[in-house]
Length: 265
Image (tube, rainbow, N blue to C red):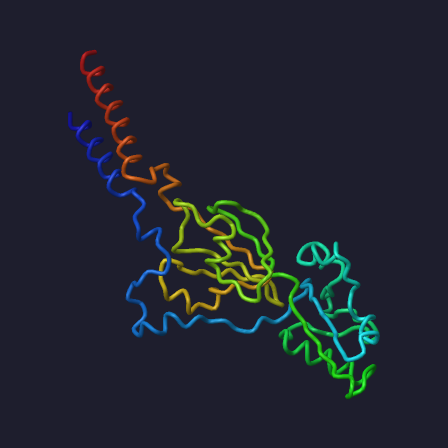
């Protein structure tokens, strides 16, 4: 009888401890970690510096369009429709292993570690020096050919995604992948980021609004976002109180049946 009571107490403790609560599910909660509330809303975003394998979209404009045609890809209706997709791989400028891009007339231009604004200035200055005159009214625009990132783990749909925006925060990136599931650990999301010296793993708690001050709140190209499962999933506990109640009821039924069968033997 003592064993039966012990098993019952154990089952009840599982029921009360394994439910997934709102604190595990709600993003950007006020946990009192920020003294000045306005600071929590100040999103941290530093200019992105170009890395190896990034693809840049560079467009050159001037008063004489014929002079700029050599620098810009020919835009057909089909090309324009797919410009945000695979065509950028062929028409864009890929940063090679040495940090260079091969640009018409100018040849190799080193862009590794430069921001987009710095690359615009660099390309414009080189064009004015080697090809155009100051009176050409030269205008150069440089953009990343999409923000590519990977999401895996406890999300709606794992995979590699590309968003055509200048800035994307991690919650937007996860929402694009179907959001974190109920059994995903929002308190310890891993961001694997590329650096010139290699990869580094960073942690961010998305249930605390102080995450908006994190340097990893805004994702960067080639980031990998990994969502770990909650321990509740690892032990096979239910996600809701009803699921846990059903599990506990099943366990109790087996225990009681086993107890009376062994008692009657």
